[in-house]
Image (cartoon, rainbow, N blue to C red):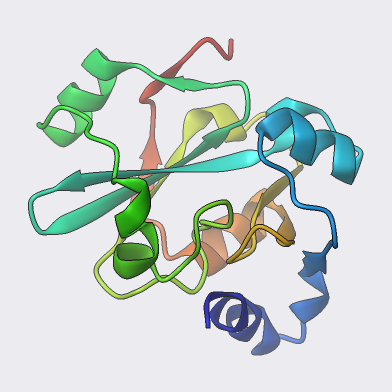
Length: 156
């Protein structure tokens, strides 16, 4: 159901063509960028963290890495990645396709400052075969994000 939930988000405004399908599965940011034809840093990767009963989803540039001290200062808990086997259960999306659209209720989405340098970014699309091409305004509008944060390093 995850790809369908992503398409449904965009369908409301007639933008379901933003969800792009590929037979080829990309396993890394570099693979995804090569397949799409963009720079790896334009891949908006989704990093999911668990804190007790809720999930924090940080959407960041493909060349950014979580800075543990910045993360802890922002969220008041040490970053702990959501285990692979729990990804679909908590987010509603399959591993390799996590994105900020069509998520299960209760997932808290934050957009990292590393994305603001781009006009267009590419997120996951619900599974490993789908990608979403959005501009920053669309990313903000359709992600139901809480706020922009600065929790990454190595991208400046």
